[in-house]
Image (cartoon, rainbow, N blue to C red; front, side):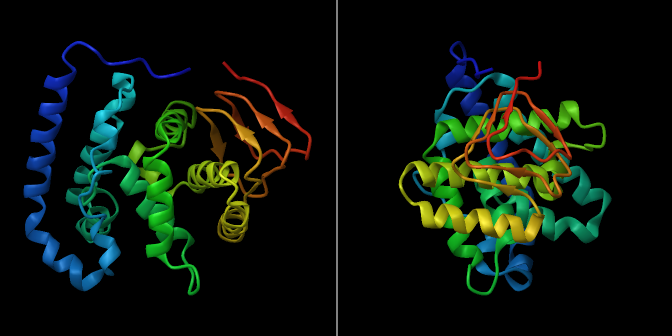
Length: 249
């Protein structure tokens, strides 16, 4: 399933999005100074650049387009309900302009180590995701898959922040793009790091479709020549090196 184009009223919708973003940013401006003391500089999000509005200039199905708005609302609600998490939620979600930036931040902080810095990882993730519309679509379709097909999924926000199956899939998508660009050593480095941190091993050369639910994921292995179709749910299964998983409708 591919996203439909938004045509009628597109410019008006974008204008409303900009107004909403301005309101969101102003409501959290008073806490920004505190984050500078608590988090490293990369916790404050990526500065505005030509990539910042990349998502808003693309055309997505309206349900995919509004996922980021839902995530922000969920994060605000959780920050009010659990004040101890407010700084974390601001740094991870509310300080960012779009889902791509927030995801890059979350992945970078989960995978960092003393020799693979979060700032470096964030640059890699953000640049690749921002320059590949197919990845931008996939990260949203995967979020919908978790929300719609995983009974234990609390929200889009919780999936983005805490679900290692989702994180592993999105790192794979970046690694797959790197592999296709001939940057195979870096792609394999990301695969190795995901295996260390999450216990999930997905070869960057594997072919995986959209709308994937990787439930828990511990011990899952998807080999180099594996093919995974669209709308597939992987429930603690280990895939052989030449396995082919069909489409689940």
